[in-house]
Image (cartoon, rainbow, N blue to C red; front, side, top):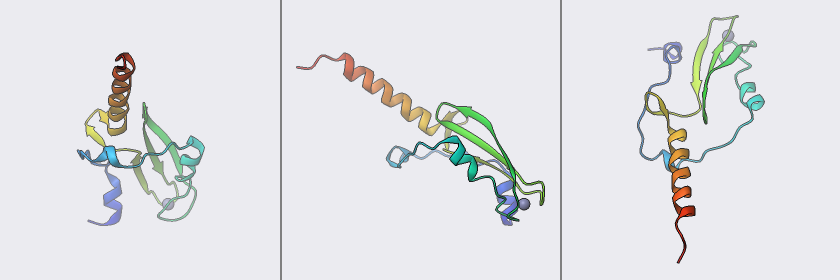
Length: 106
Ligand SMILES: [Zn+2]
């Protein structure tokens, strides 16, 4: 399988219980999209757009009109088909915070 075929498909869904330990970053949209402005195959300008956004999840499609290169990129893996890893972690932390805030201290 050559490199082009690897990027031809959407990223695989994964399940890694250690994602809670991995550093996460907040990135401005303009800075993020700048990473997809140049085609990695031919170095010409390429078109990119956000095709899905949900909570902390973002999925970008990059297409190069010059050489036909295209790929999908997403900022986090999926634990399940419809549950981005960081969205689940954010929900768990929000619930934990709400419980600790509602529990009277001794
Ligand atoms: Zn290209």
